[in-house]
Length: 295
Picture (cartoon, rainbow, N blue to C red):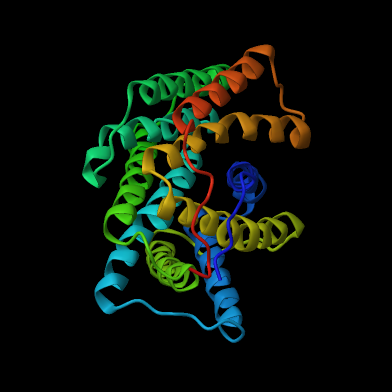
């Protein structure tokens, strides 16, 4: 049976996806990046194993598995590890957000790779979106005393999620979401374990903040938001889907203001409105129906 997901899927994805920065703030003082991500991915695999006892999973062919695994290495391992290590080495969250916020622009540049055409209106919308992101994080960007390698990691994360989105759209747009998630998180867990073993201590302080962050990262953030992203990639044009990520920094700013009493200025509010305008321009005329788990 096919379920038509209404227009709430996009804002729901943005809200859940934006909590990633909140999770990082909660967990970062108590655990190293690859260690946390390993436990996160391992937890997702255990959850998917339990779900497989209830739901029948349709596994893809070996050839398609390889494409799904490559997309997972880019969308999960490369993107998340790059962002976490960039912050760990001293880059501010605002600067990471503005760098990763360039993704829709890069996606539009490479859209021809997946046989998409970007219209003039969409280019204007992309420009509005980037300007909005810049306003939101402008007051938080700190360029002083940031190691060069932090920039390398942040831009590597940007390229990783950009090409991961395009690669999955081109080579493996249709697959059972449960099987695909298991493959991608499994590959990413192995890679994170290797990084943890060779470059980190593997120590994690088990307290309420870490446990809460880990549980949220496993269920709503990993299983929930990634499944929503896969669904939108399968049916939506890559440029329009990734334009939704422009809403992440403004949404995160609102969350940080509410949860951590961080300042939310008029300039940030203006950036939020500008960003939303850009997303509307990019997605105007796009059907709101996306693929489903049952497809």
